[in-house]
Figure (tube, rainbow, N blue to C red):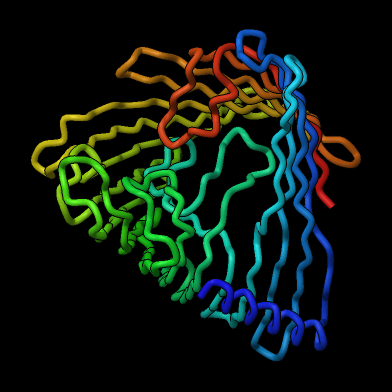
Length: 373
């Protein structure tokens, strides 16, 4: 099914190019080096390259957009030298979109993300955005996404996804490979803000533990609520409840809620402060979720001038009493951006939804150079 979608998109892209109005290349490249003396791999280096093509075609009130891009990456430990460096090439985005002033339909490998939180995100259902990553690289979904807009802030999303079988950030169990899942989101305006509700239904792979029969598929669900208000300081909340339809022990149900606020203080060039608090509970029944934890996150960002910015990002694990801290400096160059980052964390970095932070355990520094083209 996914192969048929890929072939169809190729044909649409080919036909669109014949009547193109604007066809351009775009992408980004980053090279980085990381030193962490206390880790098993003390010095690493690598690069990430995302070349892509974009198409825009206007025909009266109807607009066609398309994007095709790839993700090429490689990294290797230099101390001690790794004989088997990691490298890969995979599709990153491959979609086509038809839209007018109030409706749109996008088909293909695309990014789907929503919600109000930015550091601790219960509604990170389909992406893996990392607040530490200046490139904002995240996985995509093979999906058909329809969107309808009613006025300034009211909109409706409907999607049908084809999961690849890999567990996403908040999946209790891996989704069934290529088995369609469907869902939607409605957002509406409220005084001084907006609110949203979302739902997603799918199927998970059988649980292999002793608490349920193996070999039978599971129905899975996700339900979310979020809201955001501008009351001088920005205030928001984000809630997610997910689970499966049969008893699976501690992974039967998962509930998460984040509350947050931000404000820019008039100090010098403006100090922006973001603070979020997340509460997490999991268990076999709604009435009893004994597995509980909580995290706090704070971001302080200060621009020295148009070209230089400092940012401190800190997390705290309330259950285990462990603090995490990252200090970033970004300098904008004529062509590209230079980022320096230092951190001091527990040896085994464990943050909610952030299994991609394992290389930032202990203390270390990283230098990254980024070019957009």
